[in-house]
Length: 358
Image 1 (tube, helix red, strand yellow):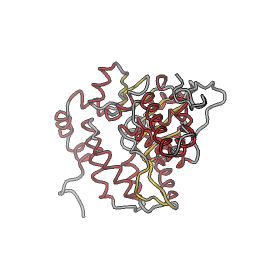
Image 2 (image 1 turned 90 degrees about the vertical axis):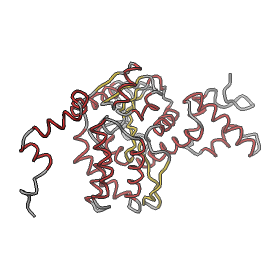
Image 3 (image 1 turned 30 degrees about the vertical axis):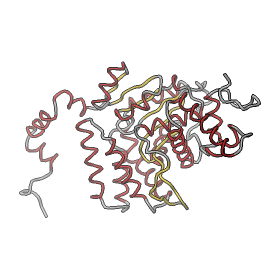
Image 4 (image 1 turned 180 degrees about the vertical axis):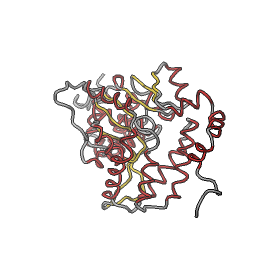
């Protein structure tokens, strides 16, 4: 069947070809529909027929709707614009390329230990973007996640919205400088060596390696470039006249947002998702993990561990705190903490009022 061909027999012959042609327009849906899908029709019928064809292709290929795919294209396009190029690192010419294969890595607690957003917020506070106490809610949510292993999607969304507000009115140059400083001084050293090794194995096999994260795209791209990865898709903040508006471009790349962005990237790069691999620590990334041929749970939260075990996915756990919580339970760890002795408790909890100075 000529899936989306024009009446004269020309045009794309499959959903993949159709979506790849769309990607060439870098997300200009209206122009693509008008110029590529059904040019002979009048404007109203042309748009209607084009949207129906696009919806069919997207549903068949990725199992999502047209608005979700369009949002993913906006996220990818925004990430490309932020980077200034589609790929941050070109492949090694000495390595034969495995065309159509790629690996997608979450960042927080998958590639690096802890939350990149908290580290970024603290860096912004040091530069007087806001007061340190303003990030207390974000820090508490991260502590809760580290101890319980349960990530709340609403916590993540509210944290990213707060981060957008923090940078509103600031210049892109300011944020880039801070992100570079943070990656150099705080983030790169927090990477799990075993996760980096996995990423390097994909690169050595000639496959693309992409970070896909809710982290602001500037930080994600600097981190990806530092490690020699192909590129990074992150949460994109709108920019006008060189300054952030406080509004979002596309999705927050968390949960379904990651699936939408990966779908758009796959269309642009003609990736075969059955030959791709995804890595994450969170149950909220199930939409991305289930769209690829191979899924790996790294440092998984409780729900993702259960899901991975039921699906037969590989599980890699590099975190000692999470292992201790699973083995002994939070109450036992708290008892051990306070049994550690006066010196140990004092070191962790801070000096008592009796010994403190003013």
